[in-house]
Every structure is written in C-alpha cells, then in structure tokens.
Image (tube, rainbow, N blue to C red):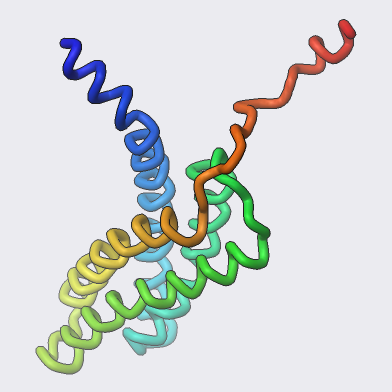
Amino acid sequence: MDFIRVLYQRFSSLLHELTKFGLIGAAAFVIDTGLYNAFLWLIGGPLTSKVFATVISATFAYAGNRFWTFRHREQSGLGREYFLFFLLNGIALLFGLLAIGFTSYTLHLQDQFSLNVANIVGVGLGTLFRFWSYKRWVFLEATEPIPAELPDAEVRQER
C-alpha cells in the first residue's frame, strides 16, 4: 500500500490535470461533434464544417482549461496564451482535417457514420497533441506558489 501511496503522491498533480483536462475535453468534444453534424447538415462541406465546429469548441476549451484545469499554473498573459492556444489548436485541427479528408476524398465515404468516425479519430489524435503542447507552451509551470483560494470574507472582517 505504501508503494501506491507514494506513486499517487508523485503523480497526483498530473492525475488531477489529466482528469480536469479530460472533463473539459469531453464537453468540448460534445460541442465539436454536435456542431460538426449541424454544420454538415447546414453547410454540407465536411472540411468547412469541421473548421467552424473546432473554432467554437476550442474557444470553450480555452476558457475551461485556463480558468479550471491549469488555473494553478503561471499566467503569462491572455494574449500570448490565447495566440498559442489557437495556433496549437490549428495544428491539432490538421489531424481532424486529414482524417476527414482521407475518409471523404480518398476512400469516397461521405455518409454521416464514416465522417463521424473520421472526426472521432482526428479528435483523438489531436487531443494527445493538445495535452502535451498546452503543458509545454501555453499553460506554464508557476515560478511561485499560487494560493489555492482567496481568504473568505469572514476572515477579512475579523482583522
């Protein structure tokens, strides 16, 4: 049991980040997939639909990751983070576009099921890239400890 406790203590920060990243990612996935299918129905173009869906779901993911998943990390400026976040999401979007493009234009499978499977494969590959790149370049490790929470109003009134 001590081995498990030591292992948990060593990787607890990573485990908490992965859990939060996964929850935000799951919500962004639902947004992305729902909008992708809606845009397929409205616009018809699988690649254009993917781009629109990704821009909207990535905006949601940025807010969730900045203010929840990686809130304990140093904030290096909203403009810098936002630019890098969307640059890296653009690279991750290429995974999805390649999967959808291959399915649609190389395999000539343009039915809803095939396009959604391709979307899921692209999102999966992009997610691996995003987690690694966000930790590496966007949401940096804090150089100073960041307080877990602000003091309560009651504590401030007692002083």
